[in-house]
Length: 141
Ligand code: 5GP
Ligand code: ZN
Image 1 (cartoon, rainbow, N blue to C red):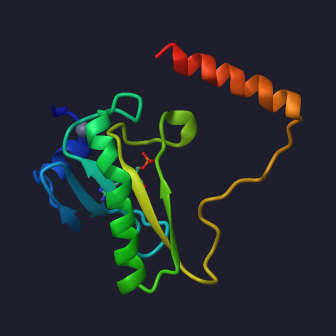
Image 2: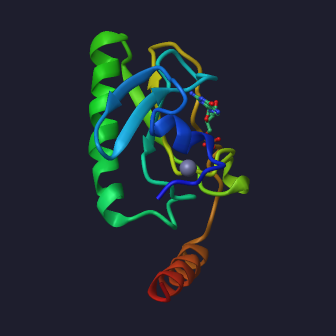
């Protein structure tokens, strides 16, 4: 399934050219136009899913292994010493293109912190209560 108005559908399916790292029948891996670091890549499924909540399990099952291969390629050839795998769902999470994609961001020794957060605090009771709420939400799916 493709969405005619979606730029990542057009890129993933080759209608718009891109710096392509990898392609098979399910995915195209491209370089991000606004890289967080040299080699920042995006894994695009060729099928249109808005986000992770819509995605097919059979497609998603292949994404993490592919992200691992892309990251290994970055370590071997770009001199990266690590990489982050990031996937944003929804505006509040920073998603700006509403075609599911996974960022693979190479990290270099001494480079800036690109993906991070300030640890908060929670009591054991709060954690237990929150865990129950998420568990309930998952059971309703
Ligand atoms: P999001 O914020 O939705 O998780 O990530 C969208 C990413 O897509 C951003 O990092 C942005 O730089 C990248 N991007 C947006 N439009 C294009 C495009 O036309 N081509 C490429 N290669 N990257 C794009
Ligand atoms: Zn799309």
